[in-house]
Amino acid sequence: MTSAVSIRNVVKSYTRGKQNVEVLHALNLDVPEGEFLALMGPSGSGKTTLLNLIGGLDQPTSGEITVAGERVDQLSSSALSKWRARHVGFVFQFYNLMPMLTAEKNVELPLLLTSLSGAERKQRVAAALEIVGLSDRAKHKPSELSGGQQQRVAIARALVSDPTILVCDEPTGDLDRATAEEVLGLLQTLNRTQKKTIVMVTHDPKAADHASRTLHMDKGQLVSETVKS
Image 1 (cartoon, rainbow, N blue to C red):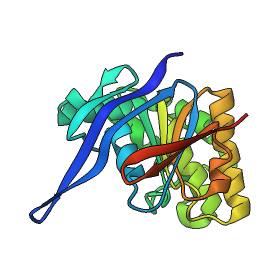
Image 2 (cartoon, rainbow, N blue to C red):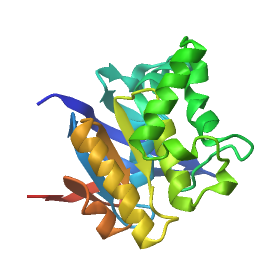
Image 3 (cartoon, rainbow, N blue to C red):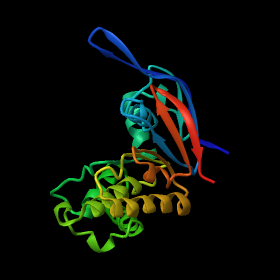
């Protein structure tokens, strides 16, 4: 099976004052194409650091990271930015929607960096909003939408450029249980029907239950694995 993500001997360190703090220690990971992977672990275990490396938001101190067939650890900042726009859709805990823009304009934002025509962008936006069940809310601004609807808009925005991988950081952390279940069900559907590879960081075991595999992290290392039967 082809790997969407391949990580080999990755170390990530930060300098705090005069101290060198190693957050990830010689970490190895493979995520097959089409997998829905959850990353769990206590605060400070390195989950979000690992997610940021997979999404190309950060670079490792050493080691190799291959995502969507590209050695992202070797890319320059400008090449990495173009690679992210092509291959990665981001979903965060806080929806990061532009309050003055409608749902459809928020979803269109990533496409403004592409060479698509206005008509093509409009078509892509309509398709993404239909996938998340919000076609009837296209003209609404974030303040006119519920938290769950805002997160669905954020997922549509992540999907609109047809990325290779969806990277989700606590996507249900700001939602009540019923709404969280709806959003997680949507991610599960995207994984099963659109074959999207999803890597999700979560503190919530119920959220992790929607993934096909859960990896537990502690102190910068992968310590255990749960595979859904």
